[in-house]
Length: 162
Image (cartoon, rainbow, N blue to C red; front, side):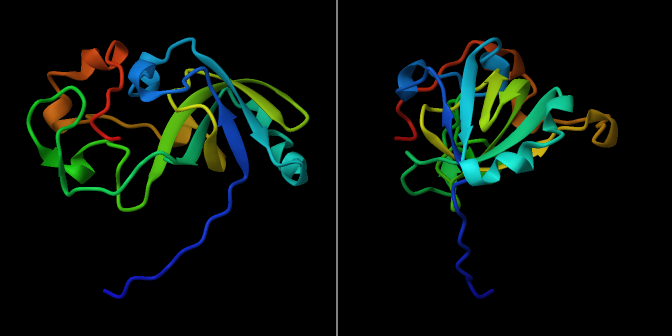
């Protein structure tokens, strides 16, 4: 397969209370109640029309502090190496992150969000509405995380992906 370069542009910036990895939750489940804001580029303000009617949104963002990747990683919540694509590790071939957050309100080009689990000043690539009714999942299997899932609420990031 021939590699093709793809270009993305930052549409905004995510502001959170997390200025370093050591105190940051590793998933939104561990960031319950953590508030943040998104500062969208002003030329995109009109693109926010009708979004306020949604309670949750997907944030697609760039892991701006990620540095390279390995095909096998020792993920949070485990002491065994796993295949990168079976983890949510930030160091990836394309350093793209995805989180579902609560949308509390919108004022002009500022979105007020909750349950955010990313570093302050993370570049935002896209926003999409979360629609649970068209994305229902049943009989979900979570592989090696099955016995570790509850730890997501308390586990914080460390320096393993710096």
